[in-house]
Length: 146
Image (cartoon, rainbow, N blue to C red; front, side, top):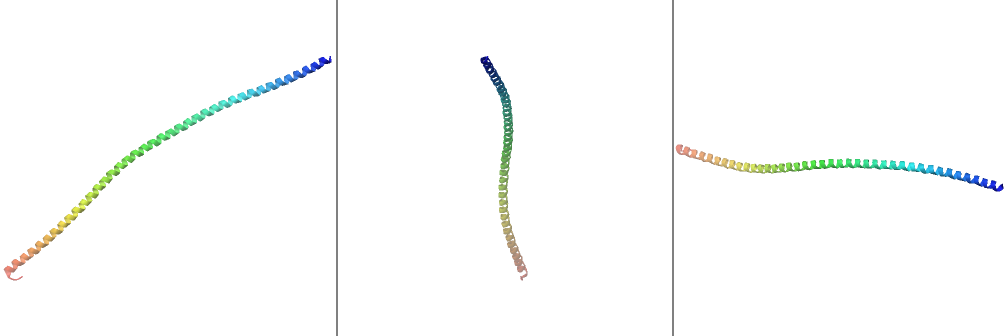
């Protein structure tokens, strides 16, 4: 009987330990499942975050590419304007050279004309003097007095 009650107590203790281990095992299983759910949630969130980052990165890349295209267009426009400005500048420089040359030619012509005018004025004075002398000579010969 003692042996039976000893074995019964031992069986009851073992049953209690088994129950505690089963409870502990179920508790650990619940924790494991909770962790698995948490891990899956975190993986989904991480994938969503990666997708958002990719979309954001793609959006940023698209914005930067659009800005690059815009700047390329501005550069092309500026280069065309520069080429046109250079052409206008060259035309203006040619025109300026022509005007400077023409002005120099006009100045030379004016000087030449002035010299001709002076020569003609000198000749005119000489002719007047000669006429005056001739008139005086004629008067002197006719009248005998100066």
